[in-house]
Amino acid sequence: MRGTQAALWLARTPEGSWRCRTSGEAPGPSTAWEPIADPFGHASADASDPATLAGEADALGPARTLVGLRLLPPCSPQKVFGIGRNYRAHAHELGNEVPTTPLCFLKAPSCLIVSGDALALPRGYERIDMEAELVVVVGQRARAVAAADAWQHVAGYLLGNDVSCRDLQHRDKQWTRAKGLDGFGPVSPFMRLVAPGWSLPVSELEILGYLDDVPVQRGWVADMIFSIPALIEHLSEGMTLEPGDLIFTGTPAGVAALSPGQVVRVELAGLDLGRLVTPIT
Image (cartoon, rainbow, N blue to C red; front, side, top):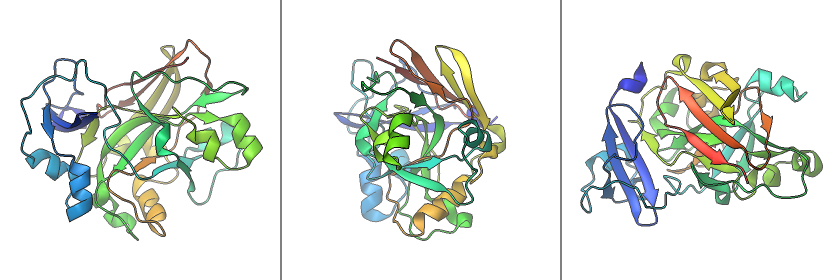
């Protein structure tokens, strides 16, 4: 199982970026972290990859746990992409056609929150759904990248929840507000960094979504209609992807409506990315 291999992790707080290493498991409360310079800022400046920069960076202070510190998303993206209907069963469950090319949209970076942060549902809407997803973090700048070279431009992975207001999707006829409101982009607080060129073992990975500990979503990453390399090729055809940009890769069937008092949990089986937990208020 790939999840048992040594792993390098990145976190961010208002004080800056932090690095830790584990034997493959996600960091816990007792994990010691070292403060380092932001590897994504340096990656943008000198075309290096964030994993190498984070691994080789000098510690800026003593190691410590992150208990008591406010956690932020592990990077600060310029762009947050979403991919709609990238699992056939999800497209069918909402009565939509299966796309023949990637169905792309943008989420506002201000929608991002981290595990443990509460999502306050906006009032006045009939249905707001959870969507459990695997999130790709761009590493090296990507422009007109062929799918065969796409893994060279991946820095790491997060868990995500592409929260979606169905009322606004139907009313606005496009998805900027429906998927970009404040809090509509929960992500993991710890990014699992990977070396450029590392190929994700998609046949081993399953995205899992729970609502109040009841399993509601389950889908093999290999069942994506458009693979991660295909998505990077498609997105980079006309837009430059910058280090730290995020790609929410699509959700399997089983999306569920949210109500105050519930708790959403997202996990990935086959590669430990921790847990993304979002209380709903």
